[in-house]
Amino acid sequence: MRKRICALALVSVFVAATAAASVYRIPEQSYEATAKAGANIASALSATASYYNPANMSWLQNAWHAEADFTYIHLSSVKYTDAGTSMFSGSSEEENFLLPAIFAVSPEYNNLHFGISATTPFGLAKRWDDPYPRTFAEKFTLKVYEVNPSASYKINTYLSVAGGVRLLYSTGEVVSNGYVADGITAGRSMEGDETAWGYNLALSVKPNTKSNISATYRSNVDLDLEGDATLFTNYGGTTINTKGTVEVNAPAVLSLSGSYLFFDKLTIDLTWDRTFWSEFEDFDFNYDDPISNPVLYSAFDAAIARNWKDSNGYRISFSYRMNDMLDLMAGFAYDETPIPEKTLGFELPDSDAYIFSAGARFNLSSRLSLGLGVLYHQLNPREVDNGIVDGEFKDGSALLITSGFSYTF
Image 1 (spheres, rainbow, N blue to C red):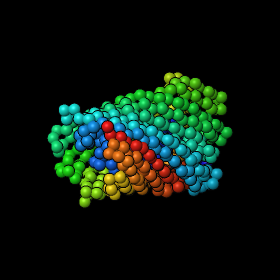
Image 2: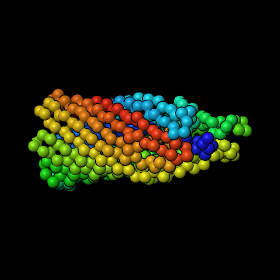
Image 3: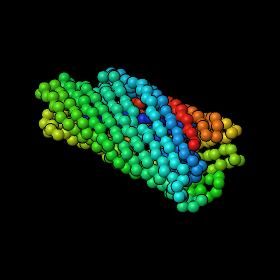
């Protein structure tokens, strides 16, 4: 029997199941990003540039640009097969979400453009109902909302720079309840929220009318979630109602991207991004009241090493202008997981992933366009043996469908 009293500490997180990138980052906020598997940095030439690459705002038509999108996300059930006993095996619950996003860019004012976006860049959830997995991850939710005003400056016809301010509001909830040893139960219910600030930078170089080279950076933001917590165990009959805090990172992301227009119809975008998950060294909950019960301290108060590593994403997209009314898009990506085997658990059964996508833009007029993007994110099966998990996770996947409309005025 595994020594669960230490392992139970792994439930002490406010993070969520993978969406369509490594861990709980969601880069697909627009129909174009979904249709292009995230390879839309250098080729972002719409209102979405305000979020993905504000330096590209300098290359837009001198007018107001606006876009609204809705993304439906379906997370499949993840199957866990224990190597030792079927009693520890189980399957996570399926999850469904709807995420809105809006983008806007102003006309040019003395070589300046101004933009704003409202997105949900991190989040989602994971739930397990089977007895052993739910001991570690009965319910996790994280929602991060971001408002990002930005400005670009066109230095000349070849060079544009940009920067912005990131306002993030996050909410999180963790619920756990299970056996930590024979006859001993422990659990916790905790909710918290936080508002924090960050920044973003962008650079675009346009050597000619057909090519664009871009670099973007979104800063790390430490989210110190604070809220009410209830801890309880039958060991000593202890129940503690207190307040607690825990830090969760919205990690920094660096993207390098290049696009080129072939034959005046086909645009290819190559994008590499690096997510700096190594900021996520441990989870350390702090409570207003001291936790003297040894079971509750071991499970919920001791710092938990995570030791995640920085991860890379490799993306390519194709956009083909069929005619003035129709653009077709497709993308492919490979995302690395930042989670090492020794700290992988039921709360985040992540692995390297392949991403496939397609979509279309319908230009109803010179001002109005409608778009649709579909993306499939397939996690590789992963065998784990770390003293907490001894088995295989498989069948993890995500389906994203994004629709939206853009208007120029």
